[in-house]
Amino acid sequence: MAASAPASPIRIAGGALTGMSRLHRYIGNEFLRVWGLTFGSLALVSQLIEVFTRLRRYAGHAMPADSFTAYLLLRLPQTLLILMPITTLLAAIVALSLLSRRREVLAMRALGLSPLYLAAPILAFGVLVSGVLMTANWSVIPMATHKSEWIKNVKLLGKQEAALFGQNRQWLRLDRDRLMSIQLVHPTVDSLYGVTIYRLNASFELEEMIEAGSIEFTDSQWRITQGTRWRFQADRSVEVDELQHAPIDLGKLPADFREVVIDPDEMDGAQLGRYIEQLHQSGLDSARHEINYHTKFAIPAVSLLMVMIGVPLGLRGTRRPQMAQGISLAILISIAYAIIQGYTMALGNQNLLPPVMAAWFADGLLLAVGSGLLWRLR
Figure 1: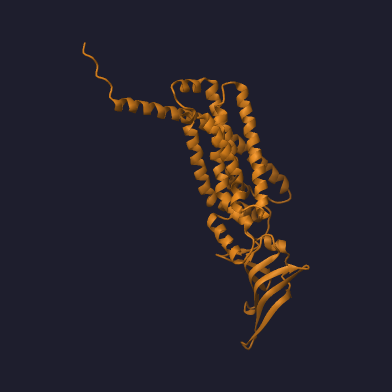
Figure 2 (figure 1 turned 90 degrees about the vertical axis):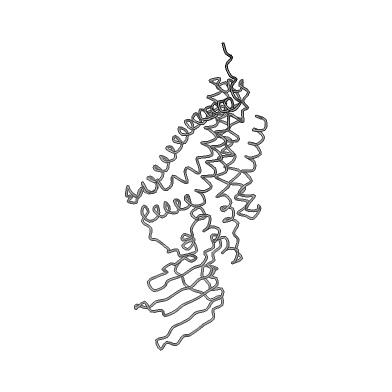
């Protein structure tokens, strides 16, 4: 009987790669199944809490069903961003723990496969989801958040739109015959910058215009720090007055102007960058906004960092108690991250930490812990 020809190295390698890709698909499918159940459950609970909270808070207001539904849907991207880190951490721990309890991880290790190799699909998912969330948090999520806040205030609470936003300015109607244009409303200091006030007569003709570099609220009164007033007379002549610390009645309090400022969470990356530049040019503190700018990347990166921690915790053993311990650790890690992140951001807002450190310090701790655990797993 003729001897069979030996299998070629290419066929052996191809078969091995096919087997490994199937193995990765199997582990990835197990992880995605657990991830889907976990995320669905957490998202459902968070939405139910949102519904009942809003229903109780807005009990005295008419709430059209279509507007309320649109509000909830537009809040979903922000909910996804918040839930994704804990979801990926729990899913990694539970999925790998289930594989370990069924002795499947042990069998794979017996074939000489390293734990990091087995965890490759889960780590790849962490990289993918963090990248997607970074892109979304730069553009889509702020836009959806801004629209949801508009629906909440205008459609659900019945508030009037306080301002119109142009490319770089905000326009407000102070009263029946005065319009106001503002370049910058400081979010914390009671000051307005780059202000122009127009007074119109009944025929919508311009009667008076005031331009002020800044207007400050001191001693319960608005004062023009330095500005110019033009009065347009019927004979087409113009009276010009220079104003220094002159009082002016705007008919509004500082809180009324801060309400029309777009929250940093509602600005996309490009808008926030331009706003920070305006603050710099005006010599104003921009720490809060710079921190928010950096967190547009730091918060989405947490999903990958949580996977780096979840993989070693999920591969620790095959006994049931270790899964429970892993879930408990996941919850504690998430709480610790939230506390540290909030604390460092508060320090950054007080200029006690640079904005980059304030935004990324908690991520750096997760990276150190995750890298250490993966190194030991190696």
